[in-house]
Image 1 (cartoon, one colour):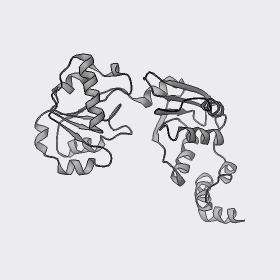
Image 2: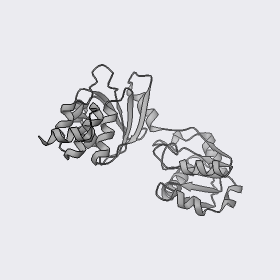
Image 3: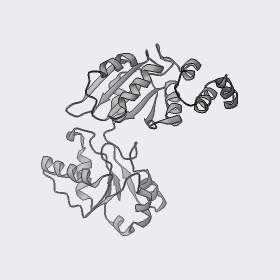
Length: 270
């Protein structure tokens, strides 16, 4: 059996009894980062008095999972095997999907255990009163892809949940404050950890709060939908004011208005 085992996103006590039991029965562990997994198992062993008998740890992350599975000795699946991402549910903005498909294609029994998930935790903690939400994960780092994705996020009819790194969280909040200054948002860093911090307010209010805040840590941001009271959609004027190349600007304007990219590019040249 292959078990996909969620790990705590911060607080060690969030590991389930079932997860601990199955980890103790696994002989092989696929890990997003073997060093992080070994450190986690050491802490869990000390805390719960459990002895783990892992014969081998196999590094399998987003950059190598296909090559690892192409070369794997299928004999290891005759014993219990586990997969752990660094934190939270495997396959949610983390590796794991390739191994699920591998199990399906090779008729291997597998089971996904429920567990901690930062997106759900942030959505509920935000108190944003919608019946639907969109999990977007990480935005692209830069360029036209990021602009397109931000455009979709701010014009979505649902609450949107984003993940962001400490290196780009300030940029994200600045972008939100620029395009939707009065849109209510919620941001949480280091969820369930000792230094968890929450920010609730309009994009502008959160931007101001960030000026004196320690931004180190992993972030989740929840954005109120455009149809919510106080929500703003991106306008043509917003896009025209962007400091990006005309071709990229024309593509965004075309997507917003339905006019062709060529027509918008010609207008921008005048």
